[in-house]
Image (tube, rainbow, N blue to C red; front, top):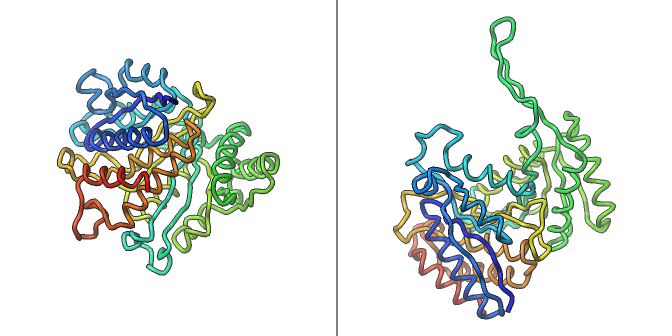
Length: 368
């Protein structure tokens, strides 16, 4: 029997509740498909600060290094907002993990099921058939990390701030390779988003993406779009896109826009893939819901577990190479929604299920 070894980091707020459901789904699917899971839970985020004095305790980081993947919950909350910004859970936990494992590629699926079309702020005619777009964002380069970066007082007494946008050919090539692999599992269409009419980095971006796709898979349909137009087109007709690949800041903005038009963060998963491979030869990655800790509903059996469950499906797909298992989970979630079984955040005021009941409903549909 194949054993999947990963670390689970439930984190804060609703994290432990939804993580528990995701693990139950994986165990149930494993009994059907002939694999087992070997996982251990470790503190991260606010609970890490409370219990160990660090948002990312050394033991937690070591457990991650010993695993083939990380299934992450969510971190942060009002309790820790009084800390200096660099010590708050979001920055003191996630950024060091990204750095430690060189997690350079963020994959954010934008999925809206037709049954939940009313949740989208877009007009009904645009989303009546749902939304299915994948945003592939470069995560460790660009203006967020470029040097020099400074704020100083200039001769006339004004303050002047400086950020530097930098990209190398190798950084663009490796994110393009991820986009090509993702597109090969979908409709084989990639839209590369840049600002090549203004930025030198975007001129290089466009050149390298084009040559890389021609080399890796010329059957992929490649288009280019300026970021301002892409932001508008996502609102006008999101399904004109299949896979979007873009640099760090543009991806940050567009993936958040995609989350909004899909209606509910409780349904959106994400994957961050690194430069290294695990013992199975697949990319090491961190998988987490797109939403936050929702401390106001924590411990009340109200949280939507779907995003955490779908994050587990992404883990199966990318870090364990188990496409059939990943699709089985995704189809079970879809069928649960189609059957009208919804948590409070997506029920539009109608009858709703609690966290645990929603988990049971998904598990029941794994074999359908």
